[in-house]
Image 1 (cartoon, helix red, strand yellow):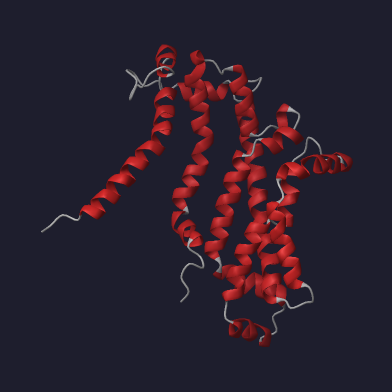
Image 2 (cartoon, one colour):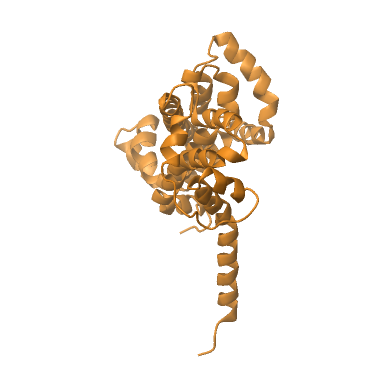
Length: 284
């Protein structure tokens, strides 16, 4: 049997690419388990495993977050969880509802409004940063979670586009049958459309979760007190305090802990994530 050199070369390229992509994470993990001396050496050379794994670096690093032991990390974790959960819920509800309206409701100027909405994707976020801060400061929302959560309940053009494209492919006969049974638009959206668009919900939830969990600029601008700090801001403060090579093992340990929820979420929802990415690529 002749070897398939094409498949072998593709497999070798994928393995090499995976190693290159995963090596920084492996270096972070090894550094997080190193002693202070080994962490200093890891900054100038490659070390594939420490002589003695220092697992206590993780609780020690988390205890150093904030002015009080463990209090800073626990507060930041709770704040990030609240902001991320509300952001995911708001994004799914608002984007799916707007997407349903663009796909199933007929009104004058619908296509024009849809094009205008898509055009806002070309508007850099930096352009609206100062006006939005002035508006939220006028509302008295500074140092609260509202500036981070409320905009998520008004939708994002990219996710609205995904929901609109999915709802447009749903057979009209299914919607007509629901109308005959006495369902209004809200009931059709809630009981019929949402249950069948799980791939779109999955990709919206994953992307929103990763964005909200790792968001640094928004919390840095609007959250001022330590009690309201999220993990991204707490990690930045930790880096400013323990950012030299001697404390690199603590910094890497804290960074890995903040990454764990995103990694777990991706592996748990991997099938739905891939289904959402391939949405619309093949029509049955």
